[in-house]
Image 1 (cartoon, rainbow, N blue to C red):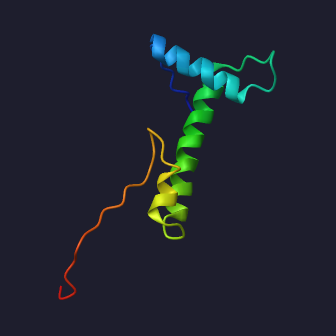
Image 2 (cartoon, rainbow, N blue to C red):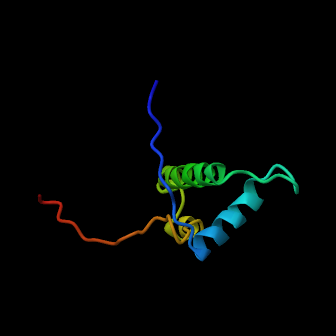
Length: 87
């Protein structure tokens, strides 16, 4: 049986506000009050899936379209560069 790492997360006012917003998003209904761990799990899953989704479409869509799906946390950046074909 694996051990569970436990940690205490400091709940700053901003982090508490974000958790409350997250709870509203994942709640099953108006009276549901999901635990913070469910909100954190959902946020981490969303972060990982969003990054993968952006990677998956980067060659199919033009950069302007892809940039519309960037967030303050995850997004693709395109750089123009000139490379020598001789090397």
